[in-house]
Length: 333
Image 1 (cartoon, helix red, strand yellow):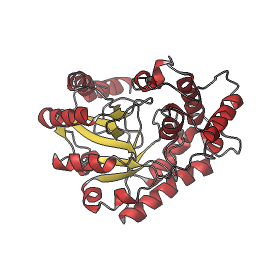
Image 2: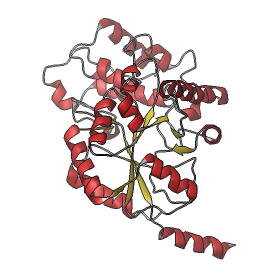
Image 3: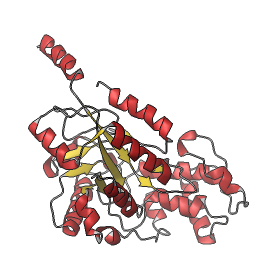
Image 4: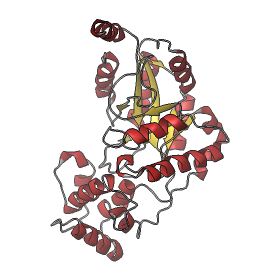
């Protein structure tokens, strides 16, 4: 048995594999603290290089290859996009112009994502409104943190903020420190708790997230593949089984109603193994054909359909993108 297992590992190393790329927003932005936005020019360059240098697999081809347990073509790549943003229409259009169908994983919250809300109301304003300032102060106090956020910032503050990333652990302003602390708490709490930071934040988060306009572009929606990404993009590992089920099923039903077709693809919110559990995987197996995580790795004909790896794409210029792609496609795991 041991010898057979080791031989399988060796044989698997020589199979052609697929690198699934995970994008989020594609737009030009003045700040991106969570580091998920790719600028339009960099995206165009990345797409042009991918067309010339890789075999871009369509979602339908992906499905057929895995179901039939065939080997992927050499240097295979598939594109996916997470969350659901207003920029998706332009992204879908750009991809169609390049004849590249992709998978778009859509969450369906009533209001905008908390990281966008915090950027809009805590980080970017020159002067935070009195109502917002009071609530942010209450939230910071509830976290037992000594952070005195600046109610107002000077005209040159945006220059210091635009390159700041939450992963840097350095903070040009106390607002940035507060953003980091609040975002971390939101990612790692059960938002259905009556005393959660999420519920406190929703007292002022009245920026609605309307996906109707995206789905009205039927030519683009039908060209690409839509996948589920839960209703609210919560950390599934922090939810009860009942809460997890509702987050997944309600989103799936809503999207299927928009599309008038069954959804086969799913992506776990956040996507690391810390953000979902065995029950999440069981739900995914019961309701979808293919479920994607966000830990790195390539896909082969024997990959687990319920925890498929992906490579997260950042706002890299074309030279850095080429270096990253070589590393991704050369990964033998």
